[in-house]
Length: 411
Image (cartoon, rainbow, N blue to C red; front, side, top):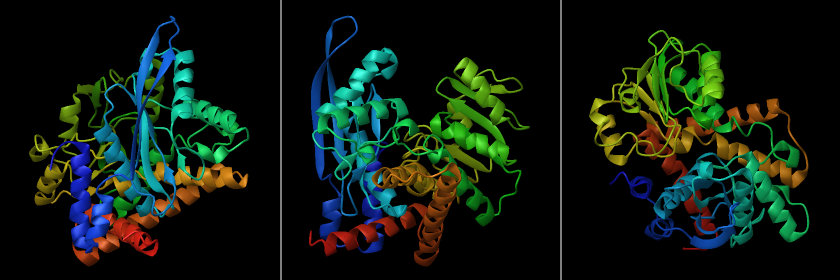
C-alpha cells in the first residue's frame, strides 16, 4: 500500500477481487493495462522555437466496451498516475452500468504557459498523433487542464483526418459541435445526488455541516448545489488557500467572487484556513474534490468528519481508509460518487451516434437515475457481504467485468 495512486488502485483491485472470489486468471488480466502508449511530437511555439512534447494514453480493460474518457494537460503528469486513472475508469464505467472500458491520457505540459494558439496546436497534435482513436475504439474526454474548447479542437482535427463527421469520437465538447448539455456540471451534480442519498441513509440533518476541499470544476458546482438546497458549507479551499465560516458560506456568491478574483481566498465574512486544516475540520461531511492521496497515513488520525464522500479520484489512500474504518468514518468511494461525468459522457456518445440531442432536464433526470441506482447497488452489496462501501462498489464492478471476460473466452 502506498500514496502512489497506482498502488492504491491495485490494492483496491486485489482486495475486492479476493472478496468477490474472482478467477485468478481474471485478476491477472485486470492487474495490468491492456495497452500503454507513450509518444512524442514536435511543435513550433509562437516565438519560432520547436518544443518536443511527451504524451500518453493508457487502455486498461475493454471487456465491457470501447475505451473512453479523460485527457490531462499537467506538468507533473506520470504514467503511473494515468494507469491508476485508467483502472479507476474501468471500474467506474462498470459501477455506473456504462458499456465502456477505462482509458486515460494526456500531455506533460502546463497549459497556463501556452498562448491560445499554442494550446490549439497542442490539442490538435495530440489527436493527430494518438495511435488509436475513434467512436468505436477510444473516445478522449476532458480532465485537468483540458476543457470543452480543447475537445472541440480535437474533434475537428479527427474529422479532418477521416474526412467525415463523427461527433461520438470525442467527449466533453461544446454543444455547438454536437456535445451534450450538462457536461460542465455532470461530475459535481452527480456527487450532489449521491450526497442527497447519504443524508437520507446515514441520518444526517438538513443543516448538516460540509467542508469541500477543492473548488474547481467539480467542487464549485457541488458547493453551488449544496447552498441552493439549504446545506451548510462551512469550509472551502482551492490551490491558493481556504476559507472558513461557522455560520456557513454562500457558495453562489463565492462562485461570483471566484470569477472576479480567481480564488476563494479573501471572500467577505470568512476567515482563512489552510488546505491541511480544512481536511481536519470537525464537520458532518468532508468532500475532497481536488486531487488524489490528500487523506493519507500522515493525517488520517486527525480526520474528524463523520463521513467522507470522494469527489476527486483516489483522495483517500488505502492506509488512511483502514484507519478511518477503525474510527467508524465511512467513505463513499470515488468509483460510485464521482461517476456522474462518465455517465453524462455516455449520454453524449449516445446522442452523437443517433443525432438525437437531449434537453437539460432529461440529462439531469437520467443522471440522477443512473448514479443513485449504482449507489443503492453498492449499499446492498455492502450489507449483504458485510464489506466496506468501496469494496462493495468494486465487487459489483468486477463481477460484471469477469462475466464479460469469460463469455468472450479471454480466460
